[in-house]
Figure (tube, rainbow, N blue to C red):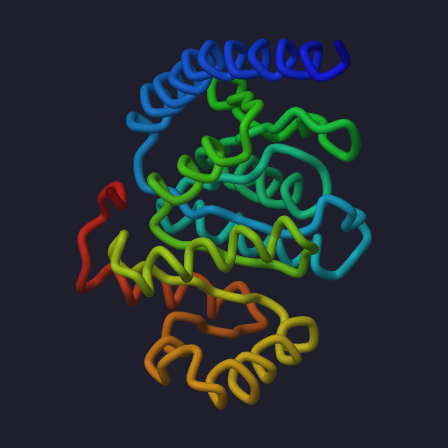
Length: 228
């Protein structure tokens, strides 16, 4: 009897999975419709736990303020910390400020600097990540945790495997990121698990001016367009 109950429960899960497809489709359709009319943007990643008095929070505000002044919209995950700083910088500059919010049991809540008509809600991380990549002209990666690394390495993998065209991926904060880059060079590259040219996909900087200069320079020779 116990095994029969388990099988019944398994079949109910499969039925629910089938219906979930429609919810996933709905998130994609809503995201595509809203994001496609926003224009060129830069996605900003970093820790939700960074406080407003932290130097990296202040640097993120400056980065996004300057990017907005250069004509780029700002896309963040919509939450606190570095995400809030990114939207704040865009708001100060009067630029486009997008928040791709995710429903989490902790940390996540909408920050007040997102444009009211550009706040999108997601239940699925993978749908949300598609929006980050599809409509970004570059990634600016501030210090963060597992989620930040997930977004960084997914973008690198998509470019490395030529699933999307190359765009700027900029790590901000030499003190924070240099250890990771050293490990990539000394361990991954040395083991032959990546190619030397893969290292060229990443740039490491410390200032807002450097971020804007790298993105502007890249788009002197490339089109501003969705990535796929």
